[in-house]
Length: 623
Image 1 (cartoon, helix red, strand yellow):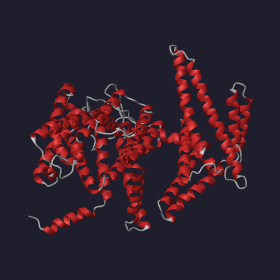
Image 2 (cartoon, rainbow, N blue to C red):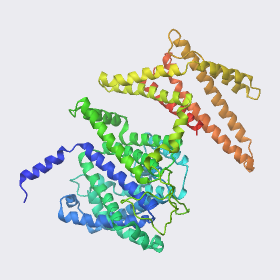
Image 3 (tube, helix red, strand yellow):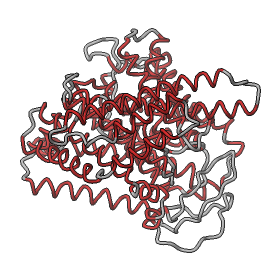
Image 4 (spheres, one colour):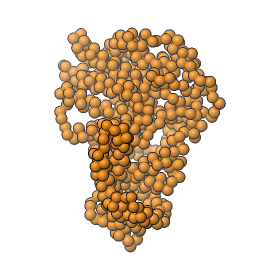
């Protein structure tokens, strides 16, 4: 028996570990498992996701049984009143659903990119809510439904913007979400019961794995016998090697252990925020490691879904409290300014080193094509690495290309960087970027003031707001001449609709007026800006009406009409986006003129939104 002092010392040591360490630990293993699975299934010639899931569960079964007999980490199972009746009526069905969810999630890696999968996972709350409605466990709430619809809208945008969309991969991920939602509804009582409730079966993730893993393993064995064993080649398993399989299963198991420690140290609030941050990080890593092309529409949709997910989980007050807690935690660490800077630099160095190693390991400047089971694709030969299995003769690759500088070339030659340089080279692109920073700084300075932040914390963002505004004014010198020229061109056009002609002339004359906030003419400048925006709104509404009338006259059976209909849809989407941007911009002049009472927070959000839409337009023009 160990002395009490040593035991207390051990407990004290664990209690001294900061919460951030547990959070980073969970994010690390969660990210590693997702990328590891994608690498094995898609890149290393082992396209057997069901067998891989089966191996994970067998490994978890063996380890949980060993830990239950040799440690106290699974002592939570002793508080669970488990009987044979409960096991077969609750654990077995839940285990089957859990297995189906895992299988569908892994099958998705064969047909979809990691980035797209993470975007689809943002729809999980919507799936759970609708399944809850179907089973009668959730009551109808209009506010919650509206928030869920925003998440679904964001995921829909991300799906619509997917360049390499795969219906099979989409359906597998949707099936995984539905199976997981049904499982969560079934274990709702198990996970929300009170400790003194005789019908309670509350379990942490590791204890749940202790009970579910054997059932899921048996289930997956039967599925694998009919789905993957007929096409399974032992050479694929030998080529992958036992150490890769053990490392992969260990990472999956350690993720469950990390979840247990994280839940015990923090709260669901922290877990939700970190989950969103982790998913964004995985999307970025997917772009870097696999050369996944993520369209601007996908980024917009994923941003909406992520914001909706955070708001759904925490609410406005919860988000504000979390930000305040994070600021308080940072300021109460007792570190001086230099110490905090050192912490940020070290953390940034570690992350940068990891990313550079990942780029180097990818071994090619050109983004590799993803493995598709329904397509025959090839990819450049990877740079030899002790961490990567040897080439599989059953999955041939082309002859090696000319050696390159690895990750540095991949970064410099990446098409996204070239696209950014083209966009930044335009005056409109630079202006929209600076405008985004200016209005976001205005919003954030307001937020810091409302949360009683120190003047020192508010001062930098207040300076950003003013200085970027001055820079934009300097860049726009002579811009009004261009607007006057555009007004003359619009007035001289004979083929333009009269309403659109006068709206275009009025818009350009309004935009060409003196710069807002100029001394002595501020009010007139704001009126001119408001006039230009009003003409733009009228033009947008009239164009939408004209497009609707044009669409009604099309013959849907005619091939040319079908093409024309798609063209009208694209034009309508662009007009609607511009109309939304104009409505956001109307907040600024109406507030300056005193017609509305919007504060800096609303003005900052509206300006940031319209600036991002403008930046998206500039990005598309330079594609």
